[in-house]
Length: 79
Image (cartoon, rainbow, N blue to C red; front, side, top):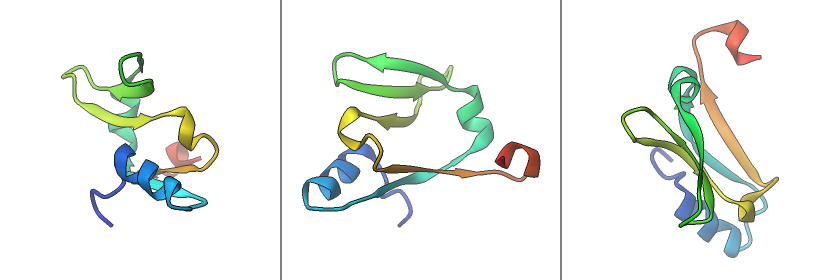
């Protein structure tokens, strides 16, 4: 599902018995430009672009059960 891999939906799926949840596909260049920031208000980890756009958000509840989907057009970066 496109745009259906946000943190709230992933957590809901886990609460209803999912073993594994998947993120939206994130292009590698976008994630490389993002900075990892601890969001103490929400209790999660955000990857934020300089424009303050949150590229990816995760939390401890999905630890080990979340698959981050990365898209790339470069074979070297895919490894």
